[in-house]
Amino acid sequence: MTIKLQLKPEVEARVIAQAAASCLSVEKYLESVIEEGIISQEQTSFYHTATDEEWEDVLMDLINSPAFTVASPLSDAAVDRESIYTREDEIFSSLSEDCC
Image (cartoon, rainbow, N blue to C red; front, side):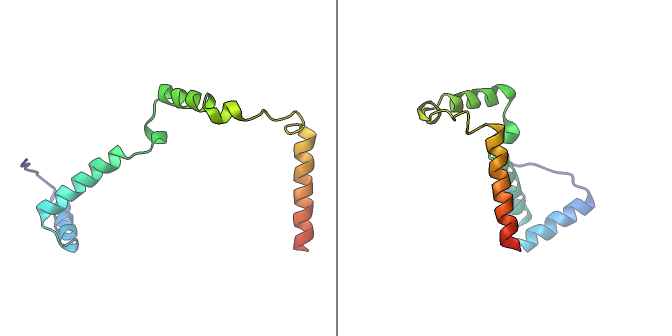
């Protein structure tokens, strides 16, 4: 495919300079820039491109995956407020003892 572009003089100068720095002809340089741009668009992460419905589908698949169905639920003690803050206090006090 042949494409004719009208570039601003400063853009043209940059393209020529970058092509020379890459040891490529202007045509080959522009071809590589376009290909890299298309590939990077295709490789854009799911996080940036997914719709709400796609997120919902993926999260439902995760929730219904064998990893969650086999795992036993956490006990009440594991998520109890007292238990959480007691563990944090123990961690902080042991860290402060190590620092002094």
